[in-house]
Image 1 (cartoon, rainbow, N blue to C red):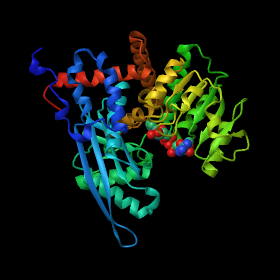
Image 2: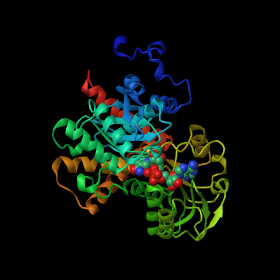
Image 3: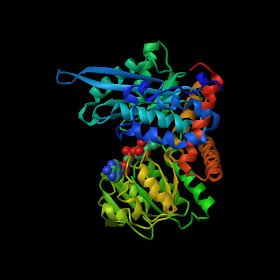
Image 4: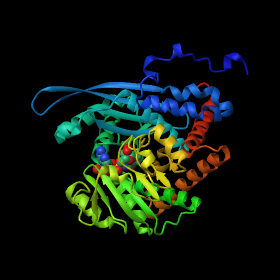
Length: 434
Ligand code: NAD
């Protein structure tokens, strides 16, 4: 290989906003890429591609508030990599959204989409806004204006947004409508996670929790753990955690501990998840549920379980609680729930961690099914969707498991190896672009 063909990037030529100097999410992502670099073989000469988003768009979103004043919000859309297909990833509305966070989330989407082998690159968007402070009309205006601003880079064949934290089916409907009207024709495939009546897919709402259940049972099977009677602990009892817990209970497992922002519960004989879901729907959280004993948040992490599912926020399993955790398998429903230091502690204790980029990929997998159905205007039954989802998740798990045992590395490193090789091979075979 000629010297010119090798990566010639020096630290000085890296734009300042791409440095890993701070411990922000982008810095964490860069460290994860560095960990897999030795396993990438000849593809590693393209590794700098993974360390630089392809395209970053920062937009101003000015709207008139209901009280007549004008407010400006900062919005982002980052396309990390599109070598394997159009960009794909959610849009987050949160007061703490930063460019570093959106960049990292876009990169993790590249890895997730490649790990489960759906034909997408990675992208992510966000607006720095607390949506709880906006009226419905203000929220609609913010959404529509943001969509118009990022309309120059999104599209059914270029980059397909979806819901993320604080965005939902209604926001996807407004995004689809705005993009469509700017194009002069309805383009349902520009976003996924839409309402069923507007080209949404059956099974999408349950898909992430179902995927967590599928990979959890697969991990149990491979390690000789019987699901019937297995003890499950779940942090976060929302869309992901609540559905995963219900499916495990239906398969004969016992949900022995649950925690969310309103409290933590314990019941060694198993919590009735249907009753708890109803309680959460009525009260907004698990706190105050009468069918289990209340425990402190610290105690929650010490309760013995066979499978622990963090399905709330980032950075929940840290150096502080990792050593106290008594479980066999961690299935990451949330994005980034385990810090790198905690990952190493769990690994040393012999805990099997199924990483987020595989464990919570059920959502994007059914988003892919939604996009395919929109293109053909032919919609599948829920059974067909669930069967196909299960197949994709099992195949992804199996490929990552194989690489982990071949290389004697963690499932997280293995998932990154599988995904980064797929991305960089596509990059190499395409040549000069994209
Ligand atoms: P959700 O809003 O439905 O539920 C979030 C849950 O987390 C709630 O039970 C809430 O009480 C709990 N929570 C919030 N703050 C907490 C705190 N400080 N301590 C303990 N619990 C707290 O959200 P969701 O869709 O279930 O998403 C959960 C996680 O899964 C997020 O990290 C999200 O990025 C990730 N994820 C979701 C999907 C999806 O399709 N919904 C897909 C991939 C990844």
